[in-house]
Length: 231
Image 1 (cartoon, rainbow, N blue to C red):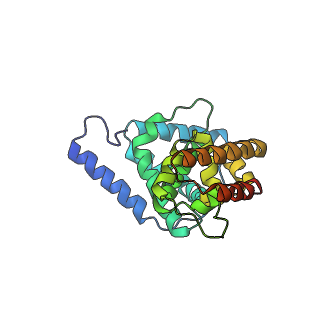
Image 2: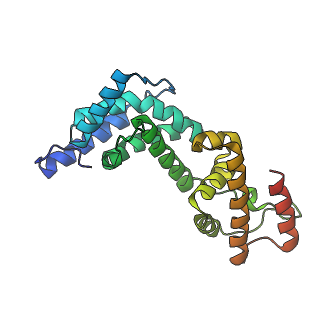
Image 3: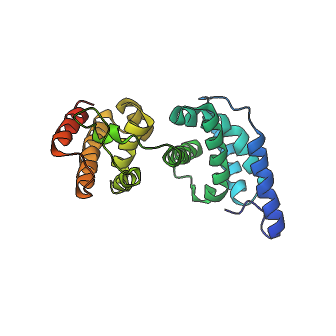
């Protein structure tokens, strides 16, 4: 999406992007908020702002930021569990919105639901990029109690082979530390389906690591499977 009006010069477009990023970055007064106005009047205003922002109206884009930044911050904070990281991710969400807003279409899905999904993806990408995956939580510890020696990048590659839903459940469970109930709420699924995805994801991850000759020994693998089964 181009945030400038049609026909604006490239210099004007660049200046506007810098201005918006500066305004976003300057807002350090985030607070957690779960209040969302679901009235028909609010929905009309939001839809109007979205359409105008798609056409390059910078004031409409700023209005969306002011309207939803605290909601996004609160949601992101529940994922990254750190105030400063949540501020950074929230700023990134609205910067990214500049290039992704065109992908939103009103097909009965409220804009805030679409924006929350974007925020979740940005938050998870942030965690993946900035935190080491705790391998011992995914494949278990050695029988002697010491963590197995596993190349973290290879574990990430193994995770990448999982179907998206399985990968997200394993990641949220073992890296972010959410409970199955919390994951179910985040993904809009039943807790039973989350348990199924978790089980299949762990087994697929173990098979992939075995194929890569990086899984624990047979004895340690049995101990790992026992631990995972009890999780």
